[in-house]
Amino acid sequence: SRRSLGEFHTPPDISDLIATVLADEGNTGMRPHRRGEWALEPTAGTGGLFRSAAQDLRRAGEDPAERGWVVLELDPLAAAGAAVNALVWELGPRAFVGCGDVLAQPNLAEDTLARARDMARHRDDVMDLIRFAIATRTTDRLLDALTSTN
Image 1 (cartoon, helix red, strand yellow):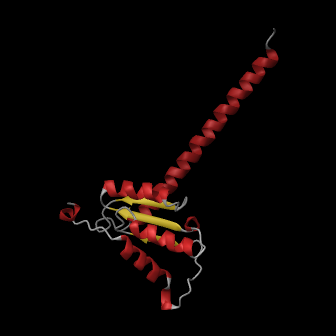
Image 2: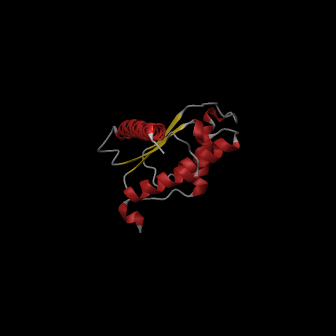
Image 3: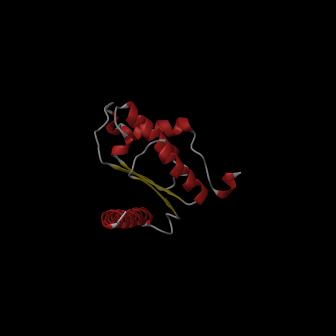
């Protein structure tokens, strides 16, 4: 039913084949070591190609979390599925999902990463405020305990 919307699911066997071929550039049988490399899938659906790539990395003794992953998808429901799958497949803290039209928004990947950086800064600011509030409350309680006359 999703094909009428222009969506086509890549079967797992095909995803596995694509991941294997892309991992073995030059057909040498040896995987180039690329710790820190980023992968981009501009029409990811729920991320099946990244599942295959992560499995391929693990078979080669690598940790997918050492790389970055950018998943872009037009359909919000599929993008949400990709976000869940990134957690399930343990793609790591540098796995980001953007939702939008890559043809109408050519900078969607960069915008997704910028939004993630902004959210991380906001999270850090909120955590700093929480730590300050806890320290203030603790200090207030200690002062009350020291100055109270029982």
